[in-house]
Amino acid sequence: MEMRKLDEDENIYTMALSGKLDVEGESIIGDKFRQVTAENDKNFIVDMGNVTYLASLGIRLLFVGAKNLASVGKKLIVVNPQPMVEETLLNSGTVKLIPIAKTKEEAQSLL
Amino acid sequence: MINTDTIFRACAGNTNKEIVNLIRRVDTWLRNGNRPTRLIYNVNLVLEELLTNIVKYSYNDSDHHTIRVELFSTSDKLHMRIEDDGMAFNCLLTEPPELGDSLMDCKEGGLGIYLVKQSVEKISYSRKENVNILEVVFNQFSA
Image (cartoon, rainbow over all chains, first blue to last red; front, side):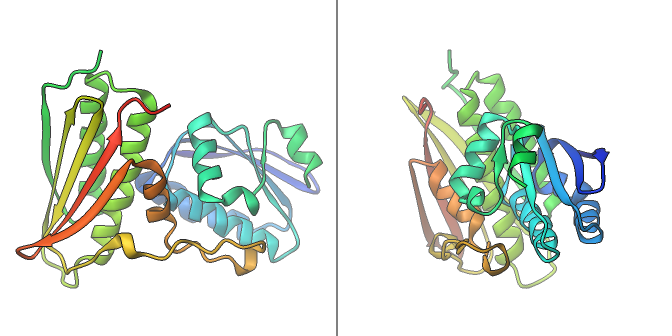
């Protein structure tokens, strides 16, 4: 599991996650993800195009990040999830609170 | 073509590291049997959610415990059985998450079991001779 910063401007922090966001993946990136979303007061675009698997621990991690950002009036948008990962996000009801966009441009329009 | 001739049996200790290794072995067994991608994803998801629940909630000591997992096929079904010697705990009675309309008010507890129930055809819990038993049925060919 990897997490890397793609871009950052005045208002938006863009990152990419890749690999399996399971119990092992969450243990690798969890602390870093929680920290970066807690320390920033920008909107976050999280590219999940290379995340191949998402378990509830991973969804909880997204919720923690989104709550950190909501506390300073910002949003977290998930971009380009693979079909099975998107299905997990839809089935869990996560999308009611963490929007999904197909592209970075669409994500920007949701901010 | 799916290989339905074999049974998978394995054990893991009650640590996240050991259950991750067990899930990897199940994943390899399913891929070697040419199971559909969706089924493999769902089995991985269900197994991880159930095993992490067992590790987290079934034991109130620091002893080593053994969790047993068995999978086998019958026609269009894939059956999974998980046994642990922890406290009596029916995870299927867990309340679903309350996500609501506000991030700050949402309660994600129960999310894992909620996902499990949506990913299987059938799941049941029983307790026999101080062992928790979860029996799960997947449709191997669900779209």
